[in-house]
Image: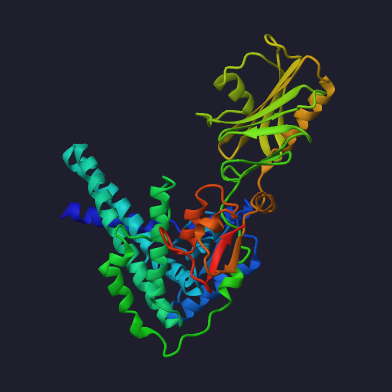
Length: 462
């Protein structure tokens, strides 16, 4: 009996300890990092759809915030404090306002169903029960068993949460004057994206709202949506806006996801950094570094920026150079600040090689370390090299929304399909670099072998 009361007490404590305000923190973080989609029309549009769903569903007692993030991922999410995040990447896969409403309704369903709280409570309870087993039996095997049972239960519950969110979403669609069958349509398109990501791009899908089986064959999903059909209004309401007109011009993909060079500037949206090199320098990059060289012959200089592993303990940038990288050849060093980030810059003693001077610097940003290295050949101008290195180091800064817009030029272009159009032919005119034909099929809902139908609106990427 005492153990039973102890479990109940611990469960109560675990649930009460669930943190609130996660969504607000995420929103503030996105805003501080300029990671909100800058098109105010899209922010307003998604909010209008969300408020329409809430009003029709009679959801009350909680204030909702709808946000479009400047993220190319095909994803959406909800927090327990009713923040609904829609990544711009998932919008490109919708073909109507009804389908976009289906995604938003699904996320509202997670909030209404208190799925975040329930999942956290199950995880914490599993951990607590495991430790109770350790205390009661002095066996750490009970802790492992508790962890295993918790993982199984969480996986099973997650599937139930998704079905419940889709059930809520279909009901919200019907009551708001949307087509509840759009819920299945959008899940179908997103499932095709998942299959494309796995089989063609060899990448996992990140959107949580997908069934393990194909949505066309999932009886429980179809039953849930069909049950919402009688709730539909006698006449559907018109959409909030012209969806296809809104879609035209939407930013697509992320050219700078793994590093992009435009002129003398290097953008990396994954790391949210920008570095500007001297004008006229030749730049190249890999996944982990960018290399700049003066090819004019006047300066005979090079500068490299590399992302390093994070320090294993609390260190200053100078400590990182001396202790972690074991550099005993630095001199004339100084601790500096680069656009608000802790940094250290120094000369490197030239012991070997054909170099007149070498420079090194370390910048700490958001838990990562960025290493700058510069070298001046025997014929270069030392004063100019010093200036170029200092200016390149000083240019290191976080990426802004304006930077992202400048780096990512790909946009959705809405056109009407002509007789005889094929995705193979359209792909030859697309700016998509990898798998253009397959990508056009996916975003238009025609994957893997469909073709455009004359007279229909289709999405291109230019």
